[in-house]
Image (cartoon, rainbow, N blue to C red; front, side, top):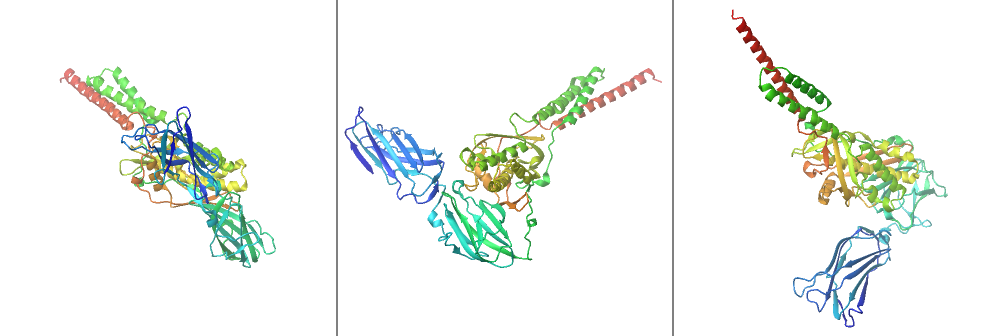
Length: 612
C-alpha cells in the first residue's frame, strides 16, 4: 500500500500528486496490443473519509510504447456500507493505437496516476491485487527464443539435410537465415516447401523468393512458385528445374521490425521419373452450392406464389363475374353471395396479392445484386493489398463478412432456387446466385487492373480465394427463415457490427456480423460452419488459375439459427394461388347453378305451355 499525509492542501492551493509505475520486468518480447482495455481497477481511499464522499477524480495515463492513452475516472459515489470505499473502475475501454499495435522489446510501458488533494487528508492506494489492470495481449513472440535456427548467417550457413527432413527457423527482423546442403546429381526438380506460422500483418515477413546458389556462387534459375493457404498457415512451394548437383546455399533475408517463424522440407524427382509439369495443377476453383446445406434435400420445394399467369386468369374470371351481374339471373343467391365471393377471392388472391409480390421482386433502394456485392468484396481486398493493410484499409476494412465493414449496411437481393425444410419448422433457402460461381474468373478478372506487383498479386489471389470461400460458406448457412417463402426473390437487410471473427491476425475473416445476431450466436454459427481444412492454392507456372479445396465439418440444423433481416417477396396473403383457384371454383359453381336452374325453368315452362 502507498500512503501519504497531505496537511498543506487547501481549496486555494490544492496539491497535485503524481504516481508512476513502470512495468517490471522490462518488455522483452514482440507483442500485439489489443484494441480494448478489458479492465482497470484502483483501490484508492481517503483515510478520514469512511464512506468515500470527498475522494478526488483520478487522472490516468497509460503509455504503451509509442501510444499514449488518458482517462479521467470520477470518484465513485458514497458507499452504502460504512467503512467501505468502492474502487475506481474502467471496463472495456477502447485504446488509441493509431501509432501502431506493435510493442517491441525495451519499449516503455508506464502507468501514471494523478489526483488533486484540496484539504488536509491522508490518501491510500492499495496495491498487490486490490488494484490491477487487465490488458489481454493477443499475440507475442520471444524473438530470441523463436530464432531456433541460429547460428545461421550469410558467411556461416547452417548445414542441414534438405530432402525428407524438416528444418525449423525464425526470420527475426532483418536477419539473414542461410542453409547449406548437398543437391544430388541428375535431378529433374528440387522442391522446397516452406510453411510460415500465422503472424499479425504488422509483423509478417514478406515471403520473398529465397536466394539459391551453387558452390561456385552461381544462382539457379528462377523457380516455379506455388502458394496456398492451409487454414491460417501460408505455404510456399519453390520448384527449381534441373538444378546443378553439388553443394548449395539457400538464404532468406528478413525485413526490419518483422518477425515470423517457419519450417521447411525438401523433395526431389530424378530425371525421367514422375510428373513435373504444370498439368499436375488442376486449377479447379468453382463454388458449388450446398456445402453448408443442412435442409432435407429429398423434400425440396419450389416457391408457390401467384404470378403473371394467375393475374391473367383472375382478370378473366372477374370479367366473367361482372358479365354475370349484368345478366338476368334466376337465383337471388348468385348476385348476393356467390358472384361477390368469387370476385373478392379472385381480386385478392389473383390480382392484389400477386401485384404486391411482383412489386417486392424489384430491388429496394440501396440494394445490391450478388454480382455487385462480389465486385465490392474483391475491391476491398484489392485496396487492402495495394495499401499494405495500413490505416483504414486494414483487416477491419476487408475482413468483414462479405466485405461489409462494421457500421455499414448490407442490402442484398437473391433469387430463390429452392427451399428445404430443416425438420424443426424452419426452412433453408438455396439461392440461384450461389451455384457454380467461377472464382477464377472473378479473382483474375480483378487483376486486369494491373496495379499490383507480382508479390502482391499472389497475396491478392490467395486472400481473395480464402475470403470468398469462407463468406459463401457462411452465407449459405445463414439463409434460414422461420416460414416457408412464397415469392421468388429474397431481400437481405443487415446492419453490420464489429466482431472478433476468426482466423489469424494476418488473415482475419468474419470480423463483422449482422446486428440481428448476438456475439454468442455468431460465434456458435461460425464455429459450426468453419471448415476443418480450407486450402487455396496458386501456381505461378503460366496458368491463371487457383485451386480451392474444402474439407467441411458436419453441420446440423440445431447448430444454425434464423438470423433475421431476411424477407422473401411474398404476396399480400398466404397461399394466394389457391385462393385464386377457390375463386374460380366458386365462379364455376355459380355458372353451374345458373345453368341447372335455367334448364329446370325451361323444362317447367315447356311442361306448362304444352301439357299434352
